[in-house]
Amino acid sequence: MSIQDGPTVRRPRIPDVTIKRLPIYLRVLDRMREQGVDIVSSAELARQSGFTSEQIRKDLAYFGAFGTRGVGYSVAMLSDRIRRILGLHREVPAALVGAGHLGTALARYNLTRPQAVRIVAIFDADPDKVGSLIETVPISPMDAMEDIVREKGVRLAILTVPASVAQTVAERLVRAGVEAILNFAPAQLRLPPGVQVQPIDLSLELESLSYYVAGERVSG
Amino acid sequence: MSIQDGPTVRRPRIPDVTIKRLPIYLRVLDRMREQGVDIVSSAELARQSGFTSEQIRKDLAYFGAFGTRGVGYSVAMLSDRIRRILGLHREVPAALVGAGHLGTALARYNLTRPQAVRIVAIFDADPDKVGSLIETVPISPMDAMEDIVREKGVRLAILTVPASVAQTVAERLVRAGVEAILNFAPAQLRLPPGVQVQPIDLSLELESLSYYVAGERVSG
View 1 (cartoon, rainbow over the protein chains, first blue to last red):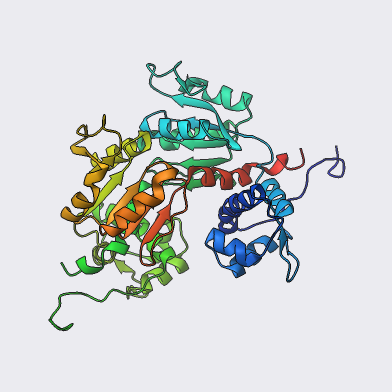
View 2 (view 1 turned 120 degrees about the vertical axis):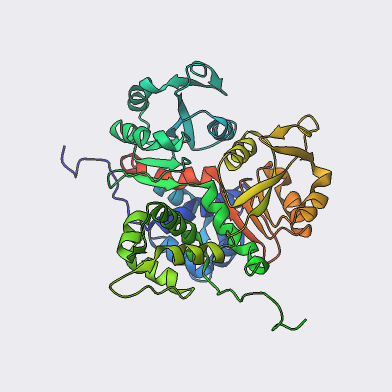
């Protein structure tokens, strides 16, 4: 099959920082759509998303959404476009590895709300946990990970394992086809280029927030 | 007391994006210090932190750390400096509100590791939870929140409450003296300027990661 025959749509190269803002725009747009709003200005999108109009216009221009001067953007068209860019127009299956307190909380959160990215498999190393359910999803053993990930076409994973095993688990996930990882383990993952890792580290977040309350303490 | 008499040190205005990187540099520097490294180049800091040398030199210059050309930065001086800028040279007391699965996981994580930002108070609306401990910290009732926050000098809070009550709880925290909030509730908080809010939203993170696995799915 030649490239011409394929149904694949060329997607624009969009900077990571823009990609991080798109779901926020999408949320605002979906809320407007529910409220029956047809057209939105970049100023109103700015007000509701917390970014500047300039930022928004620049972000949206990356994928050819320019709006109409003096009128604005079509809410329906823009939300459809962003949803498609993010691949959220269909369900995106995800795996969660590590069913401790944090993993359980995240899985429950994900499985009790309508979400485009859906946890379809959960893994844990503890034999006592294997076989029990979090909401509707059974906890599977670690040695079934590769098979289940391949079988379910999972390419996105949430890592809530201890730091000591994070690298090994991540490498196994990548070999099984995972291309993006939301990493809650306090460990820096070294993975092949092309694998997108988004770390979330509670300590780092708290340490940077400390700056904003440190004012009067500095001289202590 | 005149300004001259006061012990307050004027802190430089540093951009938020730089502040977010400082704890990462600090972690790398502390590890080097443990390993007995005295001097580090921006190239080595870049290699270990995952940022570029240019970015690092620019970030560090904000607070007057310029290094010595051809030599590098003093690991000890630089880590002390960053620690002081972030206010992490002493313990920073924090409150956690919402002792569900997520709150419990975060509190356990924080309380079982050496951390400069330390959870000293936990609150929950459920009377069945009040009085029980997470590690060493008792869960207190919501109506004691303002008093305990003031008494313990808490200015940093972690919000793990349901979205429906997040705004109200955040406003109460701010009135009691909180100046920075790590917000896990899927709600956009509207707070007075000067209050720093760092949102962490699982859905948004997953939705932006979906982009990186969406390639072949777009046209489907």
